[in-house]
Length: 248
Image (cartoon, rainbow, N blue to C red; front, side, top):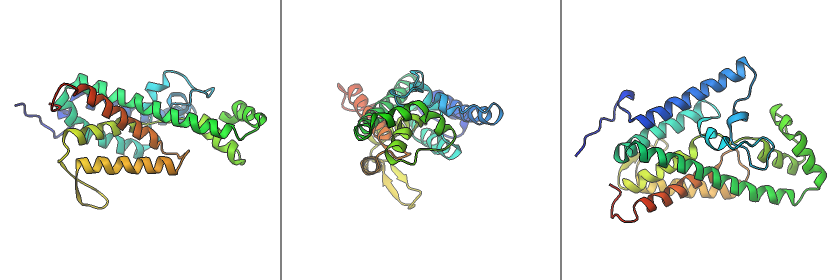
């Protein structure tokens, strides 16, 4: 039996520690780029819809290390620290590293697929002249923190020219893995402060994300990215566990 220390930053397993460091540094780089050079780094490294003129393939990776602000970063990194360190200690760094990126990519895939369906639905209700206008000038309007007052043009512009940022998809995949490996572990909720088993917490969170994703299409929160991280995490765990009765 191997005993792992779980207290203190220096005691964190290396992949989790380095992911947290990189994410913190990227937020500092974003603030510096905006304040010193007037470069909106989230609009360079965040993930745009592939049909947008702003899309670049590297954004599939870089968006996972960009965040909207300190609170967004804190909650993602807190969950990564809380659950990710346990998984890395069980799996080892290599497997955890693979899991983190597969769930992050899966989250981006499902998010973009749902966005594609929504964008196609919006475009089908718009004349081509309005679509061309959004494609030609929409990005600059967003950079000025403005948008079209015409509802469909505004929705289309936001979906094409507002980037997706954050490690939330991978974090939700980590949450799912923790719930599957340690289903009866008691977690303490913050609001309300009551204990709940990990398996019920994961089910509750997944159901909430599905409800919000369906009921609030085009929301500023990428609910289907969260679900994508959980879905691809579930598939990957099943593949890894195909010939085993337990995960460890």
